[in-house]
Length: 162
Image (cartoon, rainbow, N blue to C red; front, top):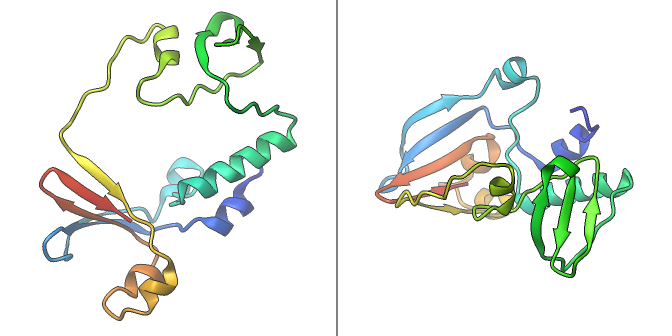
């Protein structure tokens, strides 16, 4: 909202009205979470988005605002108190803001004094993206594309979100 990206996000996102929890065996809903008042509660919509589309919007916004993009760099250290990122080639980059989206094995987390390790849950999630036209062509699946919802098929040790 504050970054002025709402129109771009609305163009590539759905705004589900609820999260449906479905049986992995039958596909029938077993429960749901209402999302109808998310904007009122949190000041922003609940967007369901294909991650590469989201990354593209964020990258374009960063480039428009003057950010420099460097590819193929390995970060070996973060120095939070100085706003510095150290690269494997010896380069040190300083900025007003460092966004450390370095994943589950984050070295940024350790640099900030947070000493936690990932915890294996034994549950696996598969994310599924199916083009709407394929869903619409199947009478049993068409509703998944005509009514915005966040669907989760829950099974033992695995689940699918779509």
